[in-house]
Each structure stands twice: as structure tokens, then as C-alpha cells.
Length: 235
Image (cartoon, rainbow, N blue to C red; front, side, top):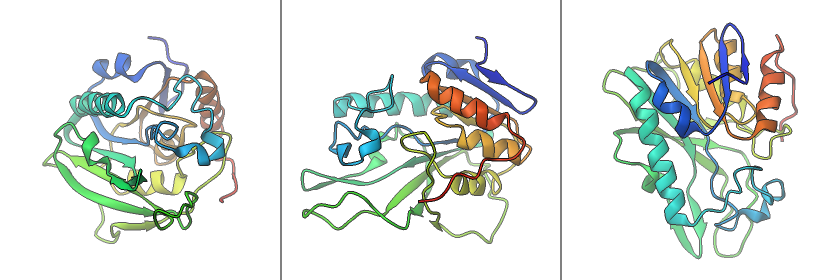
């Protein structure tokens, strides 16, 4: 498969990740933030996602969404080296007066830890619950994984960022993960606007991205081709 974009550090594919993942191996870090299926579960309050992600409409029946995420996580696990790990960004959600947890998306992988990302604000204001302002990083890790510092705790305050993507992942999160895990190849199979890839390239780590929506690939390619990261404002 021909890459959509490639340079010394980055290879980006415009494809369904299920077609590319079986061809990969020796990955040391998977860092990704998948679609949350927000349109199906009431996320249309977030205006930027009212139309989904283009090709991905973000409104699968819940059982299909769970099956899809489990399948893709299993494929990612198969790409990992003996010291590899998956950092999987998702969040608890209050739906129909009940709590929906992302643990059900785990296909049976060993869960090492849950890091809490404090966004500093929330937007789902309703009378059935308090305003959620945090998300999680679920860490699925091989036994040999070791974090490279003892000075980072499991509560991260990182403000959201804005860029042309409807739900951008902040560079502050990606850089913290990339710079506190062992060197080696980084993979983001829901690459979006290329945040994980940018963090990996800035850290001198080779990386692979997979993104289904071509306009997001274009965003990522423009971002990755610059020597200096564009300073998009924080929310």
C-alpha cells in the first residue's frame, strides 16, 4: 500500500486500519484516541461532531461499536513488541441516567493502569449528572513495559486544543506519553490531524499513522511537513 505521506520519521496511510494493522509488527507504543460513537449516544450537543467524522459517521449501534473497538484493539496488540503498550484514550459517559464505561471495549487485554486526563472543563451540561470534565488513558501493556520516569503521576491536567479537526487530541498528552515510554516505533491507527505522529517526530521516534478520512490525512501531512509545530490556540 502506498503511503499518503512519508518522510524520514513518519509513514501515514489513508486507509481502513483493519487493512493495514495485520501488516505491521515491532511496534513499541500505540497511542490513539478513537471515535467515541457520540452521535449514537447523545453527543450531538458537541456542535463540531454533529456530522461525525466524514467517512465515519460516529453513530453505530452500541453493540457494533463495542465489537469494532475490540477487533481493532486486538489487531493493535498483535503488532506490539515484547515491551510494547497501547495507550487508549476514551472516557466514561452518562447515558440514559446510567454510567457507560470504556472497559467494555477491552477484548481481554491486560490493563496495567488508568491515567486520568483532566480537561479543565466540560461541555455536556444536563440535569441528570454533574458536568464531566475528564477522560481516561487505558494502558494495556506487555509485561516488559517500563515507564522511563518516576516523576509523573496518574492525573494529568492538559487543556484541550483547537484545530480544524472536530475533536483534536492535545499535543500535551501525546508528548507526555511519547517522552515517558521507551524509544521505538509509535503507531496511531486513528491518526486524525496527526497529533501522535507530530509528538513522535518531535521526539525523534519513527511512527506510523492510519487515517480513513482523506481530509484529516491532508491536515496531518501539512502539520508533519513543517519543521516547527503550528501554535493552534488552546480552549
